[in-house]
Length: 150
Image (cartoon, rainbow, N blue to C red):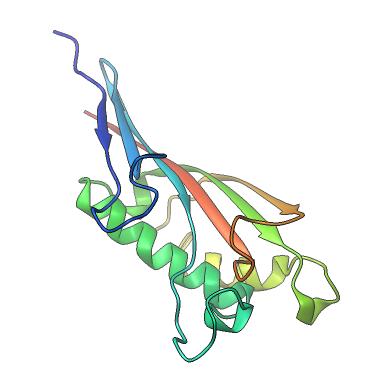
């Protein structure tokens, strides 16, 4: 019997709840996939307006916090970081690096999570510099796909 696709909505408090999903689980006969929508950084400094980079931190901090949230989302859906098979990262030019994306800062945070003793499975990955993200203070958005054998 075919398994049905499961769609997971964003939390009730999210203003984007009716625009896109948190994630989608796509089962097949032997493998099931979970695709996460792009994840953005949480505010870490509420004393700064949320349209400022300082409210979220630099590229490395934003990446680290997104990956922490990603881990929690995966675990909520019965997956782990070792199940991630694909990562796409969108980086905005950082004013502190002369308008270039801080790929090194991204990689430092990324390597704390993937390719470690706890998470030896590394996913395929694409990093790209984009002109901008939806909110001015964001420097990083990450989407991922996880898969596991049944």
